[in-house]
Amino acid sequence: MFPNFKEQITIGDLQLNFVLDGDDTDSTLVVFEMIVPPNAKVPAPHYHVDVDETLYIMEGTFTQIYGSQTLELKKATSCLLNAVLYTVLTTKAAKR
Image (cartoon, rainbow, N blue to C red; front, top):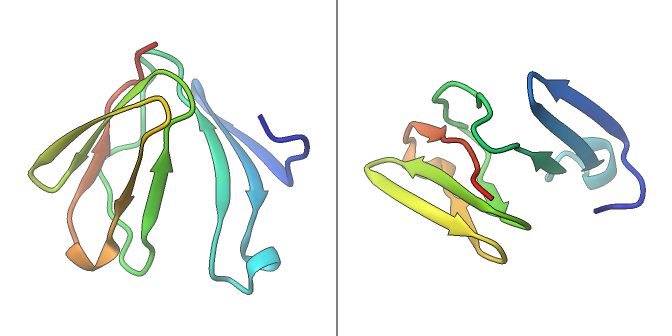
């Protein structure tokens, strides 16, 4: 999607393509594209203490568990996961 990546990391079936990092944003923001194939194994449940996370779905469907809510995010939708809530986050496999 983006023309140039600063760094590309592959973890199992997941691919992370970093566009901006702390060096570019005075340590205030990281922007990356994450490609999650259908039924891919995703990171273990986790949370971010000092960092809010914004998801924007470019293709397919992504299930995000945020606290007690299950969010079904589809193409062209977004959500903000607020670190202040201190909740456990987990992701499920994307579906096309």
